[in-house]
Figure (cartoon, rainbow, N blue to C red):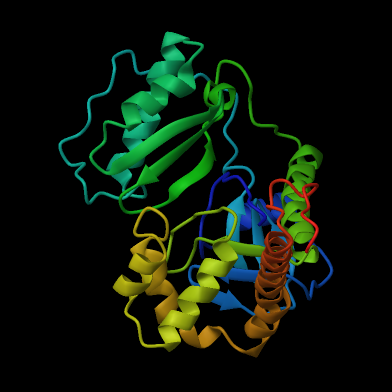
Length: 311
């Protein structure tokens, strides 16, 4: 399962014409392998991965920006010198995409920058975990955290860029060539994954769930099968591990966009998922047959050298 760390996931947002004029466009050749599910909707191949302005697209869907626009200038921002308090407006039903939530995250990060602490990621996670809409959070590295939201993404690696947010140190590049190369690298990541026949589940459209991990392609396939069997989004969510493993929003989006999963999707699933499952079952059956044969001749699976000659 291919997983991409989150830089900034957008959805269907128009590109600033000034960004396109400055950075231009560049597209990879069409790719006929892989599988993309965008906001619960299956996108049919061939896939065209490109950068346009400051954003990366797959089949005209905006996936992420690789640099904010307008590009932040080299200036020192205002610093929050007191620990921000959790706003009263944030409750267990709040979303990570709500303005009041991401503003609080920004103020918290600015405060930690002001303190100049070395364990910024740990401090950030400790405070974010106190939010009523965050079920869990942990540190991945000194610049990467994972947050589990009640209504939103579930543990997706998220870069907090400690130096990048501190405008007193590392800055966003300003020259065109460097920025274009940044965009080309992002495009290459997606293109490489699809050429490797990988599965990409991307937030966007009317579903902003962003989760990753081994077996997610199988979970989506099972969700489609259960949808065809008449199961509700609630039942699908429950059977696939509940809200923390397979969010309700994703179940609802897959049911809503079921018609987009046509012949090309099932051809990919047969080639990748069904074939892998059959191979695993065949290997398991062969192990069981080998163990049974060993027991028949008096040897256990854990001591293959011991044999008892039949009388």
